[in-house]
Amino acid sequence: MSKTKFQEYDVVICGAGPAGLKMACELQKRAAEAYKILILDKKPPWQEPIFCAEAVSADRLSALWPIQEYWIRQRLSGIYFTSPSRDRAEFYSKDCGLILNRALFHKEMADTASSMGVETNFNSLCLNVESSSDGRWILKIKCLDEVFELKTKIIVDATGPGAKISKGVPELAGMEAGDADLESAIFAVVEGVEHSPEHIELFFGSKFPGGYGWLFPRDGKEVNLGFVLGRHQGKKDSSRKQLMDFIEEYFPAAKVKAIYGGMIACGQSKKPIAKNGFFKIGDAASCVNPISRSGIVEAILNADIMAPIVLEWLSSNSPEKCREIERRALDAWMKSLGESHLQLANGKGIFSQISDKQFNRATKRLSRLSREKTTLLRIFIAVLFSTPSLIWKLRSFIR
Image (cartoon, rainbow, N blue to C red; front, side, top):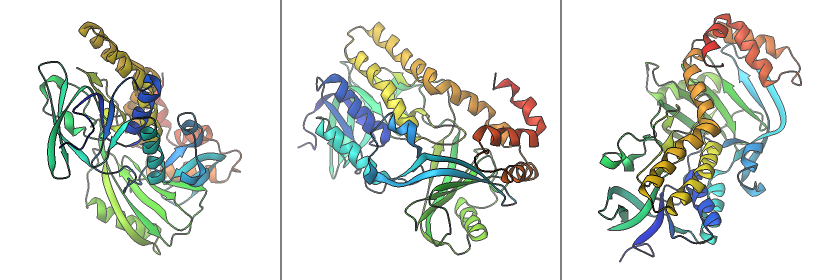
């Protein structure tokens, strides 16, 4: 006996992160329960969610999902930009961001999808996919100790970086693989760190080649300490040792409670994100901002953009029309955020050339200003003018 209600669906969504959950809700809302929609994940999305990206823009998220106080850990009023010399520049903006409780946020999204009529199954793993003779997809699913098959017209891949379920499938060759500029990130949940619960702190310099370090407040007691490094940066030590060295040097009183790590697709490509009724969204479509490495709002926005395209595909009976719709999927994303992400990805290597001395000079200059005058534009300009060669190098990607 299978662990799903049916053996055939119109849409199966693999992956119950923000992108997959928003896609499920958006499809059901727009289609008014006209289709059978199933969302799968190997575990409940509120169980041990990755903490890494808990900070979001309040304005951007509220435009995509109603904000509820009970899943907000902390409201943010600013960002500290910290140089290698430990000078700080503060960007201040009241209610500029939020620190989320990802577990509660995911639970609300999952409950919303279920209440709308989406079938949810959060103890199932997709082992592989293959095409069938009738043009639909066959998914081999493992649920607990049982392996069974499902059929569906459309698969939405929201499985995250690497997008493994499409690998080795001949009909999906050439698609985006969720691996554009994969970078390693590692972070720890710690206690005993003196910090402002209303500020994120970002650390720059040669200790974080090609990336940056961070401190995210969590609940007034715990903080998230970690870093992301550029893909092509050589490593003298393991990521775990680098993290522990960072914590020991900057926060010697910290008590480490848990360490997490993973890969982030921090680039942007122009590879197809839809092909033969197979759609990729969120991290599986490499939708992360290449500079900030933010991905929650980007994933939700991507699902919003893709949902009407998926429904248009379902309502079409012409293979030629379906192929045209699939081509428009990438165009829609590129028009929204993809083109700007592509420009940021092209310029990312230039920013990695800023020296510690130049970071120190810019931050020291900014630290003398009142926080009301320290705008993000002023911070950007100060870094540029501390590194005059950047202005010339950036000319090609800011046009």
